[in-house]
Amino acid sequence: MKHLIDPTDLTVKEIDDIIELALDIIENKEKYSEACKGKKLATLFFEPSTRTRLSFEAAMMELGGNVLGFSSADSSSATKGESVGDTVKVVSCYADIIAMRHPKEGAPLFGSMVSDVPIINAGDGGHNHPTQTLTDLLTIKREKGRLNNFTIGLCGDLKFGRTVHSLIKALSRYEGIKFILISPKELKVPSYIITEVFEKNNIEYEEVTTMEEVMDRLDVIYMTRVQKERFFNEADYVRLKDTYILDASKLKNAKSDLSIMHPLPRVNEISTELDDDPRACYFRQALNGKFVRMALILSMLEVNV
Ligand code: NCD
Image 1 (cartoon, protein in one colour):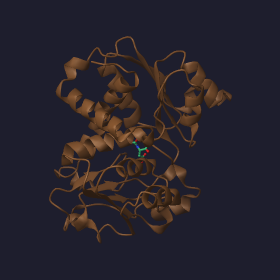
Image 2 (image 1 turned 90 degrees about the horizontal axis):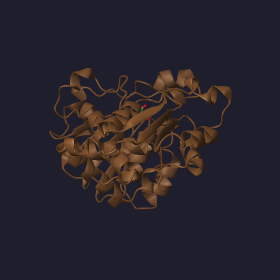
Image 3 (image 1 turned 90 degrees about the vertical axis):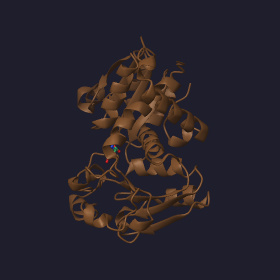
Image 4 (image 1 turned 60 degrees about the vertical axis):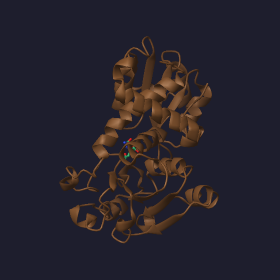
């Protein structure tokens, strides 16, 4: 039985297969409408979510399956003191596959050790978010037509942003990707990403503090929200939250085929004036999340259509 905890739990070939399957689902939705008939997905969300949980649930429904679960720790027996291990063990008696989000790094990994069904990490603290990464890769594939040979700028909270950590790990296995890390010095990527991912694999990367100085070189800009819930003090959050606001004036020197991505939710990082710019793909990205999760559920349940 396979779980998805870290994006590198999937080989590049497995990721490419999931993306191909998602592309086929987009073209042939009817073909998959009964594929998971009789199967159940449980969503165990100990932390807030809109896109991830609802796209998982919509994905299972569009495959003809059913969903159950909870959307906050408050409405589960966690409030009575039940451990994550016991919760997962019990829910694995009720469902065929579990998507789980938790504020503690490692909680889904721990869950996978006691579960009788596959576990998908739907975000663990500031650590990983592999299904957002699959969403991002499908988006880049659809927007750019390829997953190699481009320069990506990752901008904002690179320290606590789990989407960034997972995306770097996954993209660093494709050819010719150059990473430009744009953050204030307080929110740089964790040092393990530098040593274990970039240096170990000889990947080109640069760290800068403004988006203006690199904008003309980017093929993709991946904006992120400053992760308020991971800060130890409010004053630091308030000081850093609006460091980067992408608007039309900042795009003056940008490439005409730049892709502007954001895992969402957006706070102030992208001005709404850009929403109608054809380069803004964050809402298409959110839609891709449903298709790629359909593909992931099919492949983890080993359903062939
Ligand atoms: C992200 C997350 O939960 O890490 N949201 C999402 O799943 N699309 C990004 C964020 O919350 O900033």
